Image 1 (spheres, rainbow, N blue to C red):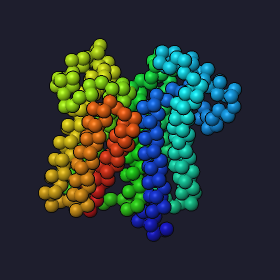
Image 2: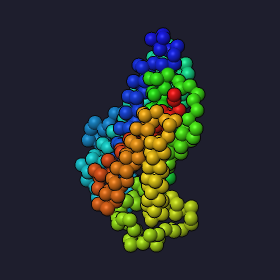
Image 3: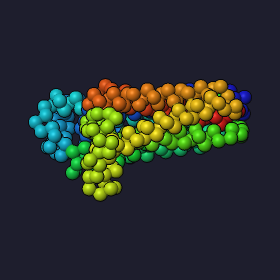
Image 4: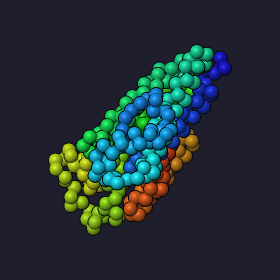
Length: 343
């Protein structure tokens, strides 16, 4: 173990970081399902500790249901909902919050143990503290998102949903990258010409495209313009503007879906351009070339999933798969960016 630490490597720490990354991946999927099932506002308060225990009696369930009946979502969308139907959406949100707490415990407890035993490379300690802080911030951002749908809106604000998703993906990416560093040791400076830049741009493009998808989900924009490649027979949607330009960028169903389509086209072209350049580059190892091709293929599959999901009217199963696969694309792209920076 000591020799691993001197080399900046710790496979036990790497396995722990990868395991937490898998939990965050599950969290993203469960969060998307919670959104798609319209369950996110079923719990109207935030109790970080006591909220672990779900309602256990008829009186507890009645209390939670009364709280839900006070918010606009019930009054304008789910008026007359039965208690059994409410329990159905409640369990999705409760599971989402419980998994979030488990992610925190799964990260914090082993981290403190590693620190106590001095079995984590010193170069990774500050990153782990940063991850711990971001995980705590994510809890606050989650409640900030939920609170936007409790007073005036019937759903959470799309921009807050997108921030919540984006922060989860930042944590996910940092876990994957730090896990790779822990497994292999720190990278040494190496000249790869422009490949670090190309890979960083590709990671950024995937990340932005997922955020654009978050705005589509937040506005339920997958339920409109269900033809492709045109939008109701037009290249540019007729109702792109809904109020001001800024409001349209965040809240117009036509605008956010149009931007997500444009992002997909740009990402598809960029991924395949990088893949072709990688195959021709004498500077990249075979692993780098393979990962570049894998990213392009995954982006292609993801584009097909997106088109199919849209044209079928955003069915729950396909929508969840589309979101989960986006995280897979991001993880492989992170792996590619990490690989081109190593000898």
